[in-house]
Image (cartoon, rainbow, N blue to C red; front, side):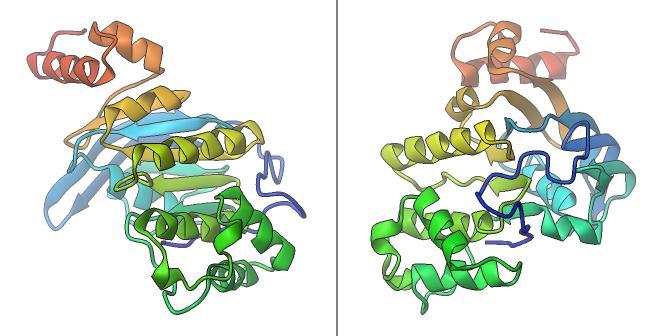
Length: 262
């Protein structure tokens, strides 16, 4: 787990509006990222509304992880502006308001689930009850005392999520959190994401599995570093001319290549 986590409210995992900042949780204008001579992100303009699940969707290599690194503040931008929770991306105060779960979990395998979560919570002034709440939120109460290295792959991933949740972030960024999970676990995680969004947390969830788009309130569609569209799942289906969201996305890609609006 990459960890830029936040001490959220005094109690509860969801943080709502936190310091009272109005407006979108994320605003990007003309965002460009170049790395080692390669143009990774190309002029991205978008906003992410608060208290909702926004899906960041696109094939591998489209720039999803780079965009998430920009929002967390660990990727230098080449041009444009990005504001997160009303502050420039990477602002020191955002370390206390943004949670990030990377594709590769980085918890301590020789510690128990509870010890891992308490460790990450302690870095942000959280206590034992906060850790217990985060563990319960990902359904690992019965495994709290088990060594993390002895868990299954799906359980291991949920420990990383608990380590991000323990601080009660206002914005939670998840880079392909359901990769490698069976359908039951994926469904359970999306249920938990919805509960968090309903409680006020903003979630940005990346995926290359288009069927997961239906779980999101809003979608950002990336392809080769370009933002093809920002829309709802229903709008994706309509614009792409198919109830199959993967086929609809492919139709939008083809239309973008041909220069014909879908």
